[in-house]
Every structure is written in structure tokens, then in C-alpha cells.
Length: 384
Image 1 (cartoon, rainbow, N blue to C red):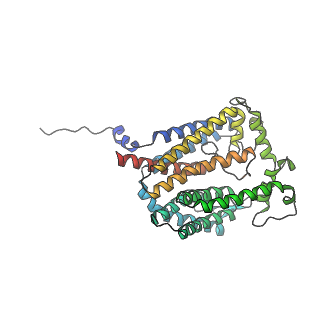
Image 2 (tube, one colour):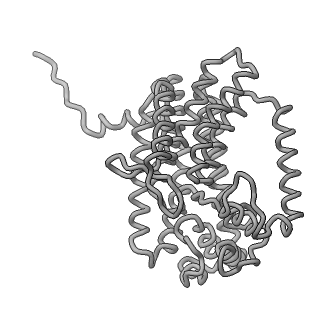
Image 3 (tube, helix red, strand yellow):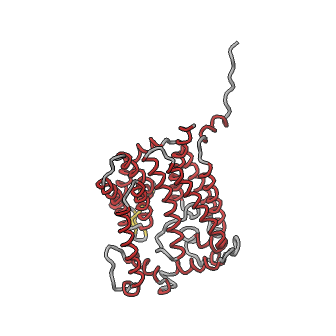
């Protein structure tokens, strides 16, 4: 009599796809996503379908995370050079044939309208991690120079669009790879020292350098205005300084415990501009106060610490550098957004991860987390 075998159930077929997923990383993601949905419901309550769309974007990001997590890091490494070349080519095409809105040429119509600079948020750390993997064991000063050139080309093209926020995120992702690859502190400390002196001088001489008839080299007028508004937003409280002033008022009015869910007056009386996108942290701080802000920061800290632990356990140079850079990119997102809303950094249009509304940014975050999960999952499956 021939033995009979039962056909495996659908659940039995699907479960192996979830093997090796990093539970702490998923927990951090769920925590931040829950906070994001909660504050979006309040901030976007009278703002059309923002809450529903935000939930849909999160589901799309979760789907991308799941798919990318199935891809072994070796295949990701094979995509590094093609993705970087395609990204730079699309940036060049955008400069020549791009769509201009509000004075910025950031979009390209390829059947659908895309923003090519978003590709570089993932392509840049992939490319530089690939480069240093190739130089493993024989990294020289010249290799760091080449890495900086690889970084400078797309960053320069993005700045020219202009899109300072995205340029900062792409540059930060690349610099994190270079730093983790072993860049000497002897080169880092002087640059930091010069930057600190320059910022101090900028703050002390704010009135002199912010005169309307004074031009700043290499910066456009609106970029100069952002810096000058940061130094003293009260010079134009109903114009250029309105965003920063209202954001600080909302954060301060939240106090220790906040005004309560759905009770933020600055938010619901529409004093906070862009309350569902760049300035959503102000809406969150008003309703949940200092305690809520600490909870949100702890959520990001949990995500970053777990990501760095995954990077430390990664099996080779490529995965270690890639995981470290992607993890620190989340820090850059959160730090720059909270800083600009709090009035300690210029307003540059950087979203708050998992909280701010935006489909493109959410897709990029999903891809980044998927790569991080792929590295963690591959390590667990190999060990198992």
C-alpha cells in the first residue's frame, strides 16, 4: 500500500517566509506606527482622507518590508551599482527634462511622475557599502576620496534642484558609511571644530549677515531666509517666521502631560502649518506633552539601538556598513525634523519617520527597514 501524504496547509506554506524575522525590530516598528496613526487621526481629522491614506501608505511600506526581507544581502549587493547608476542618470534627466513646481525641479515624468532623489536615499548607502566591501582589508586614504566623490555627485545634483532636505538625508547616509568604514578621527575632529566655529560666528553676527541687500555665495535667497528666520523668527512673525513660531507655541503649550488627544487648540484651529506633514511633531507635542515626546524619542532610540546591534552582528563589511548607515538615517530623519519644528534647526522639509504623512517617504522607510530585516534574517537563518 502506497503511503499517502497530506498536502500542507496554506499557513504551513507561508510560515517559513516569516522565519528569522527580528522580533525587537518589529516591536519598535509597531510602536512607532501606532504613535503615527494616533497623531495622524487627530492632526488630519478635518484634513480630508489623510488618516486613511496614511494607514494605506503604512500597509504599502509593510508589504515592501516583507518582500525585501526575503532578498539575501548578496543579491542586494549585486543591485548596488545598477541602482546608483540609474539614480544618478534620473537626476541628470530631471535637471534637463524635469517638472518644475514652486521654483524647484525635482520631479520627472516617466509615464508616472517620480522624484528620483528618493532613490538615492537607498542607493547611496548600498553603493558605498559595496565600494568598501571591494576594498576590504586594504582601505587607503584614496579610497575615502573616491567614496566622497561617489557621494558628492548625486548630492550636488539634488542641491541644485533645489531640495536641501533630501540632500541632507542622502549626504548623511553616505557619510555614515564612510565613518563606519574607518575614517580617522584626525580628519573628523577638525571638520567638526570648523563647523562649530562657523555656526557660533553665524549666531553672533546674525543681524549683520541677514541684511536684505546682502547676498550669500552658493545659496539661494530662500535658503538664506531660512537660516536668518531660524536666528530670529520674530523679524517676520506673520511671514517667514510663522512656521517656527507656531510650532514652538504648540510644543510649549503642551506642557508636561499635554492637552489630551484631539484637544490641541493650535492644531485644530489650524495655526500649525503643514500639521500632518513636516510639522506633525508640534501637533503631537501639544496633545501628548513632554511625557509623550519622551515616549516617542524612546521608541526611536529603541529602533536605532536595535539596528546598530544588527549592524554589529552582521557577517561581512557590506552588511555591517549598510545596516549601520540605514539605522543612523532614521536618527537623521528624527533629529532634523524635531530640531526644525523646535526652532533649533532651519526648516528643510524632512518628515518624521512613520508619523508624517507622505507616500514616497513611507516607501523609502519600508525599503530601508526591509534591508535591515534582510540582514538580521539572513544571519539568523545561517546560524539556525
